[in-house]
Length: 157
Image (cartoon, rainbow, N blue to C red; front, side, top):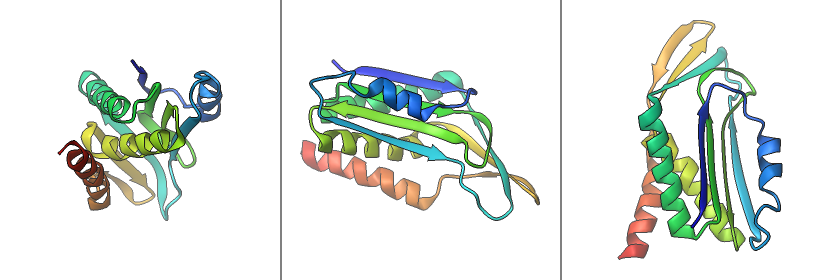
């Protein structure tokens, strides 16, 4: 049974410390993969702000991590997502997985980050030097999630 860790917090994410905590935690795992998403600089961007509905968001992230753990036989699945206001360069999300082999860990991390972009209820507000506005998920995010859904469906068939 995989160890699953889900955190949604206003606190800054120390991705280096989180990765260090996973390195060597599962000596029978040869694969440790991670993804760190951060606020990227764009023309006029001042900050991003994420809001969520705690119980629903955490349940969605838990479901995503559990699915990844089952599908790729993970030993650990980690999703740490930040909410609140974040400035350029700040970490928004840390996703990681440990597995006996690298491909499983890499694929699981890809799956988790792509699915959380469309399946986890976060609302994103962009603050720019021209004002603020809410944004929807992009078509590319939906396409990435659909890729994994199709992969799993075809393998289960």
